[in-house]
Length: 65
Image 1 (cartoon, rainbow, N blue to C red):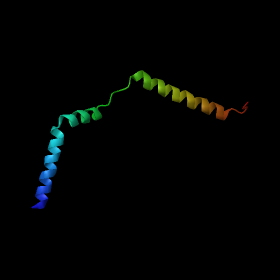
Image 2: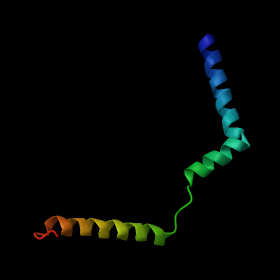
Image 3: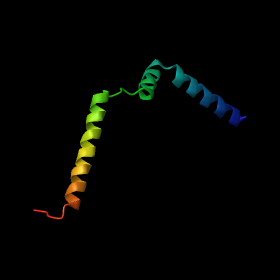
Image 4: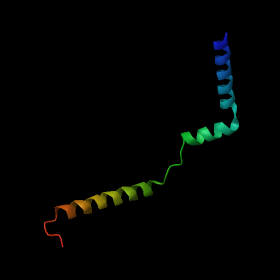
C-alpha cells in the first residue's frame, strides 16, 4: 500500500512540474541554446589553426634566434 502511495505522489509531482509554466519555459530554453553567428566560430577555428601552425613552424625551425 505504501508503494502505491509513493508512486502516486511521484507521478503527481512530475505532472505538476510539467504543467508549471515557469519550468516549461526554462526547459525549452535549455533544449534550444542560442546559436552563435557562423562567422565567429569560423574566425575562432581559423585563429586556432594559425596558432597551431605557428607553433609547429617554431618547433621545427633549426635556427632559433
